[in-house]
Length: 546
Ligand SMILES: C[C@H](O)[C@@H](O)[C@@H](O)C(=O)CO
Image (tube, rainbow, N blue to C red):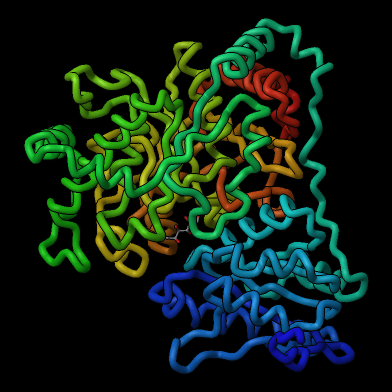
C-alpha cells in the first residue's frame, strides 16, 4: 500500500488574474530590512496590472513572525510550487538579492508563462537577483520573459507588460549580441594568432580553477557542468572551506601582523571601531590576512590558476568575511606571501580571485589573466555585480559594485585610495574589511560566460570606466552599499536596456586594458575563447574592432 501525503489544494489564477511569487535571501537578517522596498514596488506593479484589466494574486502570505513575505529557502519554494497550478501565469517579482535555487528547479517544471520582474533600484540588489535568475533559467533551458522598471510608470514597462499579458511571452531585443565563429578573419591576424596560442596553451596545460565549496548564494548559473569546464581546458579543483580554515590556523600571529602592516604602511584607510558586532576591528582584518596567506599557499599546492571562496554560507559563521583577502590576493601590489619553505608565492603577479566561486566569471578571469600576463600587460581582474545605474548629464552610467572588494589596482589611488569598512552585519556576522573606493577611469574588456547544456558561451565587449565628480559618485555609493567598491561604466555600443535584456548573470567580469591595446587584446581574447571551444557573442560596437 503506497503512502504519500494527501495533495494540498492548488493555488490557481482565475480569469484575468496573475499569480505573484517573490524570492529572496536565505539569511533572514537580510530579508527583514528588504521587505519594505518589495511592498512599495509590488503596489506599483499591482496598480499597473489593475490599469491593464488584471488582478494580482499573491501566491504566498506575509509571515508575521518572520517580518517579511519572501520565500527564503529551497524547502519553502518547493513546497509552495507543489501547490501552484503549473499552468497559471506567473510573475516572479524580485526586489532583493535572491537565491535562485529556492525556486528555479520548480520554475523549470512550470508550464504557464513566467515573467521575471525586477525593480530598477539600487537600494537592495533586486535587479542583481533578477539577472541571476535569468541566467539560471537560461542554463536550465527554461523559457521565461524578463522585464524591469524604476517605478512601473514608464512606457517601456507598460508596453512590455501588456505584451506579456496578451501573448504570455515578451521577447526583449538582444540584437546587441552578434555571433563570432572560428572562420572569422580575425583568427588570421597577429592578435588572433596570439590568442590562439594562449588558448592552445590552456588546453594543453590546463587552467585549474580551485574553488572552496560551490553554489554560492544559490547561484545555479555560477555552477557549470564538469564536462563544460573540462572541454575548455579549465577543470575544477574542488576544495573545501574547512581545509581553508585548517590552513588559516597554521598562519602565525607575526605573519598576520606583518601583512596588515604592509597595507597600513601604504595608506589603506581602515575605518576602525571597537564593537566587533557592528564595527571593524584589527582582529577581523588579521583573520582576513591569514585567509589570504592560506589561499595563496593552497594555490601553489594545487597548481591553481585561480582561487575562490564560497564564503557566505557556512564560513560566514566561522570567521571574518573573505573580501579583504580576495581583493588583496588579486592585486599585483601584494604583501609578499611566503610559502612554508620561505619562497614568495606568485611574486609580482595577481592571483585571479573568483569571488562567490562563480564559474561564469572564473572562466573569463583566468583566461584574461593568462592572456594579459603573457602580453606583459596589467593582469588584475575582477567581477562586479550589475548593481544599478542612472543618467548623469545626459549619459547613462552603470553602477558596477561588487559586494566587498576589488584588486587595489582597480581603485583610484590604489592601496592609499582604498577604504576598509566593516562588512554589513545583516550579511556578515563576523565582520571583516572591504576594499572600497571609486573605480579608476580607463578602458576595459568585459565578459561573462554561461552554459547551455554542456556548451560554454561567452559574451564579450569593451567599455570605459569614468571617475564621476565626487558628489555624484557619493550619491550612487550611498544609494547602494557605501561599504563596497563602486565603478561607474559605459559599455561600448549598448545601453541599459540592452544589457538588462540579454545578460545572463548578476555578475560582469572586468579587466582594464590600456586604450591603445584595447582592439588587439579584444581580438586575441576572442580568438583564445574560440580556440578553447567557447561560443562567442560579441556585444555592441566591440564587433567593429574585430
Ligand atoms: C551581500 C549580498 O548578498 C551580495 O553578496 C549579493 O548581492 C551579491 O553579491 C550577488 O552577486
